[in-house]
Length: 414
Ligand SMILES: Cc1cc2nc3c(=O)[nH]c(=O)nc-3n(C[C@H](O)[C@H](O)[C@H](O)COP(=O)(O)OP(=O)(O)OC[C@H]3O[C@@H](n4cnc5c(N)ncnc54)[C@H](O)[C@@H]3O)c2cc1C
Image (cartoon, rainbow, N blue to C red; front, top):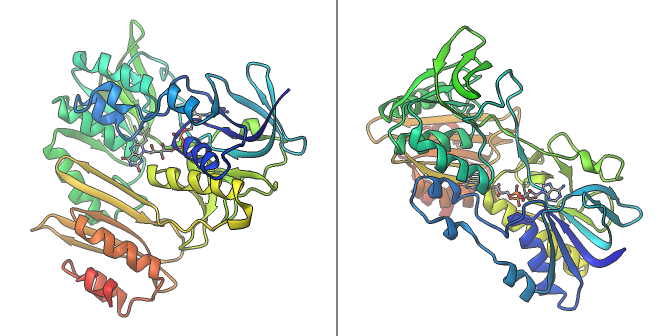
């Protein structure tokens, strides 16, 4: 059995950041990275830009095989972790190999939730996670006449933006009473939906869900919903959320939470020397103390790096204190989600200014700002993150934040 000082499972940005940080901290260490995907690290964030034709395919890649080799990182590409024996410090791979390690980082990300309905395997039903998914879209979209998008996630939004870019009319089906039910209030959602419609999205079907996909000669032809809608579509983009595949960790001794692999503030699991990072990890949110998973690039990069650092330098370990930020630009609107917008029991204050097309929704927890959703308010992002980091209570928060022109920068600087 091959032995390594450090073993990382997952070749996404969290895993690669962990492996590279370990190398920096421990120049002589034997490091291996098990990567289910064949190709070196690429940017999932850039995939929609590649599909839209805004960046070349090769520009999506962030690492090369040669760069891993130069860093002395052994990469087992195209192989999968299938069983972990944490007490025995052994990882079993799909290929049959078994690797022995001193320290281990779990960075296996998430998997798009599949539609579990008849017809879901039809050609033209798309998921959006990998470079292969993007390649499939690039090949198919030129022949698509009419599309449907399912879900209220950021991936659903990416689909809508891509379809609109190519002038393909797209229906949207959401389970909740409106888009982004998790973090927009009804006014904010109506405002965003009106903007979607202007870009060619429609109909927007709410409080409904897909029950079947009709196909013809193996290819999707229409979607059917529980409430009786039938919408013709020759492409269906599925963006109904991300699951975490933790089956390979069953009986490993590593604790699994409801949202992922449970880790403490130092990103260490209940098993000493075994860490978790990126989309795969369930962490205590530094702002609200709520256990949750995160799903964004900056979190994956920073948590991967910190897990690597804490694994290699237990004498200098530091706690994770990053404020989560997901920020995108679509249909000429900027949308950002900051901090924790899902903590139960807190207050939420919304401010919509239709004239300037600006919207904010602010989430308070025990009198402190812990989360925000911004539309077309990019310049408030830094001030809001600073306010969250300061953990200072905001005086008259409800009245102040409800003002569309509240001077957040001045408050953050005070
Ligand atoms: C299309 C798209 C657009 C996005 N846009 C944005 C954006 O604009 N802004 C933003 O902040 N975030 C965005 N995200 C989210 C962001 O890309 C992810 O949060 C981030 O990539 C997570 O990184 P990760 O390393 O934790 O996981 P992943 O990138 O999922 O990497 C995990 C890797 O582990 C591998 N793996 C899984 N199981 C095993 C196993 N058992 N053995 C070996 N390998 C395994 C997987 O194949 C994968 O390669 C986007 C995501 C997608 C898909």
